[in-house]
Picture 1 (cartoon, rainbow, N blue to C red):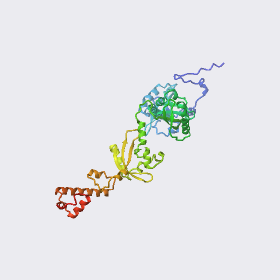
Picture 2 (picture 1 turned 180 degrees about the horizontal axis):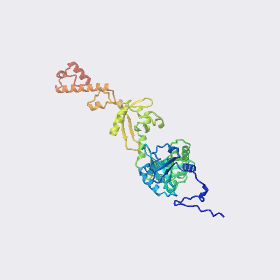
Picture 3 (picture 1 turned 90 degrees about the horizontal axis):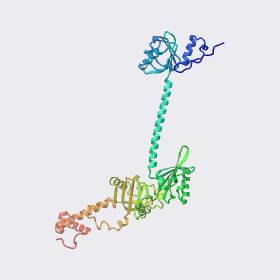
Picture 4 (picture 1 turned 90 degrees about the vertical axis):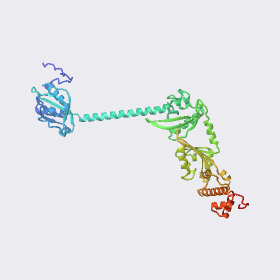
Length: 481
């Protein structure tokens, strides 16, 4: 009767050995070599003195590495300085009929360019202290671990950026003074609303997640709001509409479509037409006054593109509808080309305002009017802009007496003519002014003696009389003395 099979032996590291080692049969040298090369990328046979007696390399990649000569060398002399202690411990701690534990060893290269990292386990091969060191190439594993680490770090950086971006947009969303609601385009139910939207709606429940979007509107405005959402969901760009909320507040509603996670949403914004809870500071009255002002008034951006205008500006530019003029440049209408408008803008940028600048205005039909422009720059608002007040003065200039009959009396009066008349006319009027002033001074100096005055001025008496007649000076009926 055969004895019962022995239970598997368990070593110190918890591995389980064969139940019947005799089942492996007798080992010859060829079988031992084959098993060794299959089990490891590199195998070293080390004698009791720590000298490598033979080497077998099964890995093609490892065979191409310029490792330092191993055969005939002390194993401890072929590794990096950080691995010498490990080799010494492995040689001393490996029992003659047992196995050691896995250790990481850095084998040196012949060219001195770095090391090759291997993982060795030692197996005792006899009472003479001989051991077999089985090594595995860790470079592929290390490269995979490096890629895994790089991918993990990249994911962590992306996650950190996403969190920071979410915090910034969440802060903007919550701190915005404009009421903003995110609405599911398919169900038309509120997904999220900021605190401003809750204040405008007058109730947290009205804009709570899952609430119907139409609930916050008055019965008469629900169809209008629904039509705006439908237009936005159809990938159109609808214009804002005026609506009335259930609490009675009047607002301007705008909608913008966007997609996120394969779901379509509408970003709805509510802008109160009259600020609820704020005292009436006359802003609406100011707007009404500017709209009815007889002088033309226009607002442009910093590139002089028209943003808004009153009815008088439409009349002056000869436009029938506001939509036709909005977005056009004021340069086309105001000032002489490449002269006046650049001067006005430069002065606005330096001083902030311009008063009573004389220039011309051209309508779309080519009609030219003499105008005076006062302008102001607003640089600290939500959007930098310019405001221009334009007053026609053509009729007033036509009612003024001709320049030849009443000449300017000072340099200030002459400089006021710049922009009104040509340089040739200004020079002619300046010459007449100087001539008249010199004749008056000569007459005063000579006590109104025309003969002496002519001598002082270097004129003949006939020339002096002609100039006196032209300027209307003196009593031409009197004598010379």
